[in-house]
Length: 219
Image 1 (cartoon, rainbow, N blue to C red):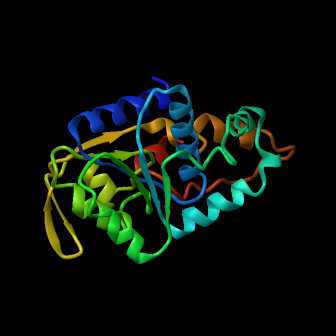
Image 2 (tube, rainbow, N blue to C red; image 1 turned 90 degrees about the vertical axis):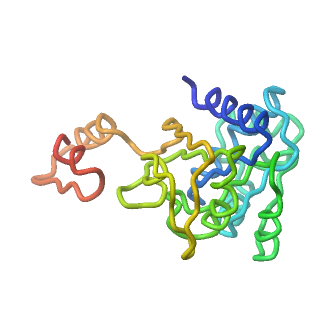
């Protein structure tokens, strides 16, 4: 399914349950891709969410840089700006959280919010606090929108662990864990091979240094 349609379904499911939707996302590009998708859904009237929190100082700063250089946006993205927003990443109901105090205040919200925070694999940063406050709630949902490396907290959640340790505390996993692959910005095997083929003079040797072992071997 289209990633934006999948996102809509996850949001509606979570809001119906009455919980928060927690989304771990890398601060640069992945977060902005997600904000774009949310704006599309809001302008379509496909979702009705009053509180969206972007809780990452780096993500906030990166988003500001994107918005300050809209001349580089494609036509489709500029069209979103033309529909009444100063920037397609600044959504109605978006709260930009910079300080630790602002971040901690989000944890008092038990439902009805979308919380976007870093890191994307749940292994560091403010996202761990939001997971700690939401994973044990059966009405909450954690949406993973990127690759989760082996051994990371995100990967363990994806593989169905029912109890995880966060900041020295054992947390029961009762929230729904959902994965959408379509938000990945990385080239796949075909894209990488096409890139290599575009060289006038092919490299003598290629080292695969990153990824699952089985995928590396296949590549």
